[in-house]
Image 1 (cartoon, rainbow, N blue to C red):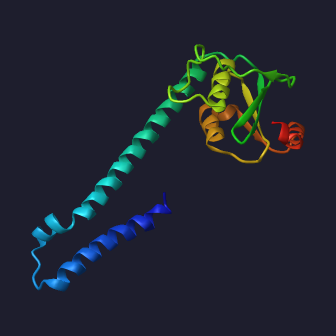
Image 2 (cartoon, rainbow, N blue to C red):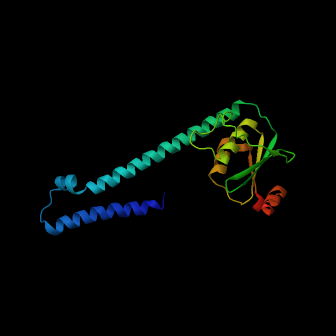
Amino acid sequence: MADEYPIEFDKKFNILYNSFYNYLSSNKNLLLEGFINFRLKKYFNLLDNTLNEAVNQFIIEKEYLEFISLLKMYINSHPTGFDTVHLIYSSSESILLDIKQNVIISTDNILKAKFLSDISFSSNDYTLNTLLNLLPKKIHIHLANNHIDEFINTLKLIFENRIQICTECDICKSYKISKGCF
């Protein structure tokens, strides 16, 4: 959003500058109240759009944080089910492994998926739902592409101190080698 600030400032400045310049180049007097009410409609529309966008962004962020809070309350109020789960993650694709490195099938039954959004069901949704059903004490996240994206950040917010990020263990290395298969 910091990158957008100069662009928005330039738009506002240009609208004000052009409005004043065009008016003053053909008029000797300026009635400020009339000028503001009738010549700055584009400027006020831009301000209105900027304000609407900021409010919408605030609401989305607030709902996201409420969702995270509800999930944190859920995991803290239920006993843990697994000791350790490994999540191998690369480019929005994930594989869950138990402590013996056996594959855990992600819960993709929508009828049992209590904690998914109503909008879309991605592989990340199924992975999150499975983790919420398993409630592991520890989640080792193995980043096959060494990239922490929004999903990983969300998991870190939800599971907090249960998360351990790894990029160079034997599991990471084996999945990096077989990256084409995954």
